[in-house]
Amino acid sequence: MDAQQIWLVRHGETKWSQTGQHTGRTDIPLTARGREQAATLAARLADHEFELVLSSPLQRAWETCQLAGLGDHAQLDPNLREWDYGEYEGITTARIQEERWDWNLWSDGVPNGETILQVAARALDVIDRAAQAQGDAVLFAHGHLLRILGALWLGLSPQQGRLFALSTASISILSYERNNRVISQWNLT
Image 1 (tube, one colour):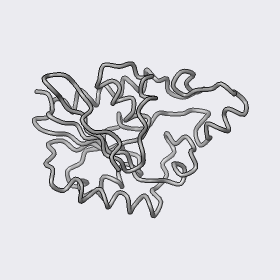
Image 2 (cartoon, rainbow, N blue to C red):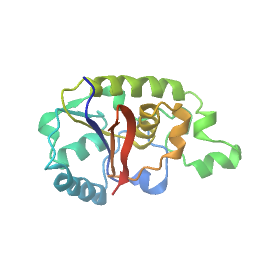
Image 3 (cartoon, one colour):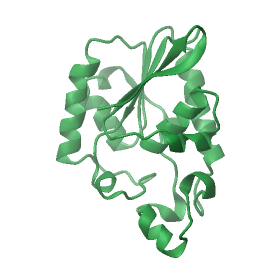
Image 4 (spheres, one colour):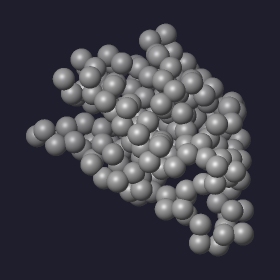
C-alpha cells in the first residue's frame, strides 16, 4: 500500500550549513540555533500520527529527530545519509569555483565521492520503504538527499533536485492527488 503522505524534515542548522560548506559524511552537531529549530519542529509534528519514522544516522539528523519529539519511534536508515562529497567535503561551492569556474554539483558531481545516481538509488530505496508503510512516514535527513528524493517522487531525474531549495529545519510533504504523486507542501519553515 502506498503511504498517504511522506514528510521530509531537513536537519537543523550546523556550523557548515551556516557557511555553505558541503557536509556529507562529516558527522557534525547542530548549532545552538539548530537545536532551537529542531525543538520548534516538535509542536508542528505533535498532532500528526506517523506509522514510520526514519532518520539518517548522522548526528545532525538524529538530534533533529530527537528534539522534534519522534526519536522514541525512529529507526536509523543509512540510505538517508547525505551525498558523499568526496574531495569537496567541507568546501564551499565558491571555493571550488575558484579552480573550476563552471562547476555545478548537479551536473559535474564530485571527485572520489558518490555519483548522483548512487545517491538516487539510495533515495529510491527510502521511497520504496516509506511507501510500504500502512500510514504516513516522516524522514529526517539532509538537504541534497531530500531534494533528490523529492525529484524522484515526481518521476523527474535526480538532477532536477537542483530546482528544489530546502532550508534547515524545514518540512516538506509528498503525497498523492488522484493517484498522481505530488508535492503538497515544500520547504516550510
